[in-house]
Length: 236
Image (cartoon, rainbow, N blue to C red; front, side, top):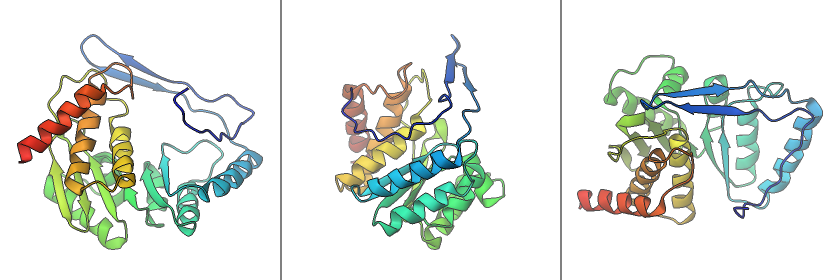
């Protein structure tokens, strides 16, 4: 209905349902089902379709947790295949899947602070320590890194330097998918060859706009444009 071209791999078991409960006081509770077990045949069919689609695209987003039955190095495998096909890989995952996938050097990496701490196996207590770890990732071959910090904004790094972007101040209704909005926004900016600072402003504005509505990923575009313009004006 939204115009997205879909190439799903259908499986025998039911897709999981994740429930987000918003309390009157703003507290959010997520109930995440474990999800189905993926068979070897289903994974093989997915990989075949994935390889076919790589020939048609320039960019790949690998996002979320790993389903049961799928090896923890799946994102590493998918990253290698995408890079061999000349595609840029945007990675947003956690745990062992993140650790293994980083070895394949995705184009863009977007952990939150907790996920970055798991990756580097140490607690990060301040912005300078986060920037230090971003620099190490950039030095290792990752092109761009975004560390999301929730209500504190995010830290972005690439070959031109590292920037801490403060959040747009909004009354948050539902913060689910704000991190996904960062990834989506940087993807759009990459496709449009957007100036790096404008890309950062757009990402901050999109995440903030998403937080203002109870339904995830239904972005109030007028608000998004207002936030983008406000960030640009503040910088100027």
